[in-house]
Image (tube, rainbow, N blue to C red; front, side):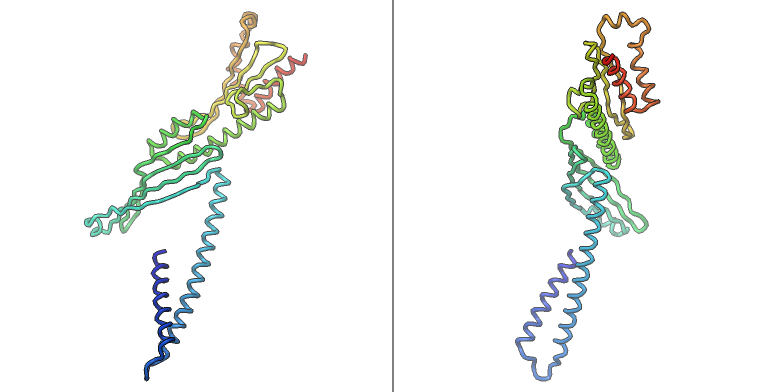
Length: 288
């Protein structure tokens, strides 16, 4: 942009000189070819400027298209971005052909329903042979959400100054949240009397009840965990709410071993098939 500004100012000066040349007749003996030459140079520069402008617009359109594709693919949208640069190169570094630059970046955006703000510093050191860059500081601000699992993960990402882990894990975390929401909603619509969601479709728990057996309920607790390396994994557990009388009658310990049997079933059938098998088992009992 600076080079274009300089070029624009040079053209303005040239136009002013041409206007003066057109108003004032040339002195006797002065070669008028200079004026014609100036007009040709301006036309050529103007044509090149239009071509450059077209190239910039085409390149900008291509970048916007790629950004939209990445946003659709990852679910991450950047709304605002700013950058400040500070040259930290000392005289001694200049003599050794070393350049040191500190970049301060600030951006805000969202990943589906989760919004965030990022501020980080990137230190670049360049010499004649290589260019190295490292994030020296990272600050992440998350808007308040019902996802308590994110707070510990954000602190870990800040401590490690790992931007890639933050964006990657956030993407998969949201994907799992959306999958859990869709799954719970589908079962609630399919078995409205048996399935109960205390906090709506966004709930992390799903209750399965048998209307013919008051006080008996199976509760599916579906958490989404992010481990130390940023890997996102679902964790499902089964809790039982059973009247004391039923526990006393359970001589074979079926209720006591139900959580372990549930985990085994998950490994064999998968999440959706396991949940449906539990719902159907209670639903069938209610129908009999």
